[in-house]
Amino acid sequence: MVGGFIGLLVGLLAAFLFLRANESKIAAVEAGEAESLGKISPAEGIAVGMSIVGLLKQIVSLGG
Image 1: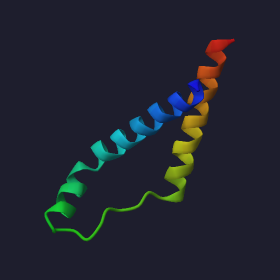
Image 2 (image 1 turned 135 degrees about the vertical axis):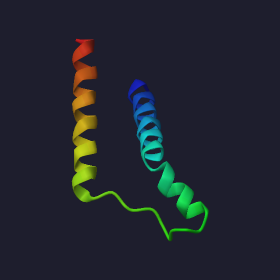
Image 3 (image 1 turned 180 degrees about the vertical axis):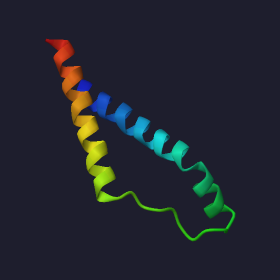
C-alpha cells in the first residue's frame, strides 16, 4: 500500500515537472500555432526511469 502511494506521488510529480517544462509548447498547441507536442526521446525516458530507481533505492535504504 505504501508503495502504491509512493508510485502515485512520483507519477504526479513527473507529470507536473513535464507540464511545467513544456508550458510554452502547450500554449502554442492550444492556440493552434503548432500541430503537437514533441515526444521525449528514448534516452530521456531511460534517464528518468533510472532516476526513479535511484530515488526508490534511497527511500528503501532509509527504512532499514
